[in-house]
Length: 536
Image (tube, rainbow, N blue to C red; front, side, top):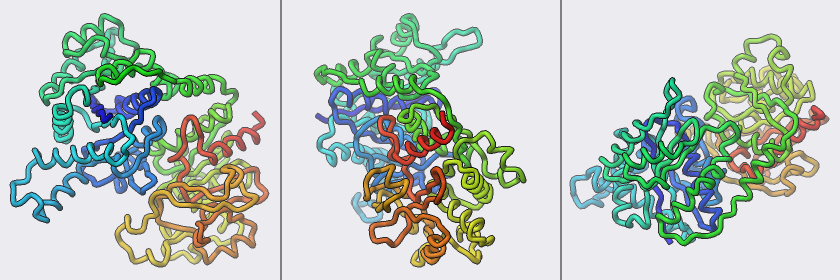
């Protein structure tokens, strides 16, 4: 079985297309189908690696080191299918490949055009997914952007061709639109009608409509939408605003029989659905008691999407620990400016310093780490958060006031964090990155070993700078625990505070592998430590 579902969006962006596509994947998996997710991003960047977090949100990293759109994080949290470079398609990748083929003479001197060459490249990448993962039943392809945007046209054209070539029984269109509510409280269907008309002008008749609405659509509005869009009334669904969690969306779609309609339109025999894991998740959500406040001290706090996987990992940990986690976003620049850190952190129960790049706000993070250490507050550092833990220890325990990372202070007397020697003269940032999954060996008697329950683990990295090995002995003699290493012992992967309730920092990003049904071990134990310290 090779079925394709193309998920597009209309009216405006940020309607939850990624969550809708992921929820469809979850529902099809609940019926025993093997699903693979693909994101098509219209931007001309080759990948998300060099894009500003303010503009694009977080960069999600796969096991094979692909730097991708944050929607792949949603796919990973909702579905089980393997994700890698092939599951992220960008306009930059597509044009780069086509131009390279043209330079190599692969097109035999033909005039290279958007149709067929660009669309053929897109199609070949989409169709390659089930060929590489031969157990695939359904490929769900999310097309980024909004119908009507010039950037999305090649992807919609490629989708039209696949639907035509594969046949509507093997390839269908799911279109997500907005149903706005005007001041009078009336729901307006006109934007959806225009959005579908734009799809029809592209040659695609949506098979299923998912309408983002403040409330569930009634029969009258569903009938009106169906009448004006040539979509069956039983194929018009609502994605309502919710006050709980995005993980309720698969249940809401299932109650409307969305998965059942998809199977019918794709000619797949009806099969039993098992959504008990999602119901159990919601039961655990409702059963949480008490609350802890986690101060997330970072550089890009204005935009929630910058740390999406991290916030989700904290939520997953809250489910496993049975307690509500309130994330308090603290801009580290504000901590730099204040002489009284307690005035900002006094009601915080635990500190988390996430990853990031650049000098701004670094000293504020150092203050937060010192506050957590001296006040016996649990601390979790991730990537940059480990560098901060090392700098704070070197300055305030070892007394090296000038200690820093060469990323922020190239001439520091004590470069406790620096590039590896072989990286120093490499100017291409991607060439110095540790990207993707690599192994870590945990030491006995450490928080990290207790969390994972095994000596050897594999987690994903995305960083350039490392703990400087020349200071290993100084750190050990001063009491700092070096808790984990690369298998060859060459690099330190985790450090921990001695004589402290729970203080640990890792070089990798455990949030990328956290799931709502299986929280990342370090996040789980961090929240458990916060809960214990607060005696909730």
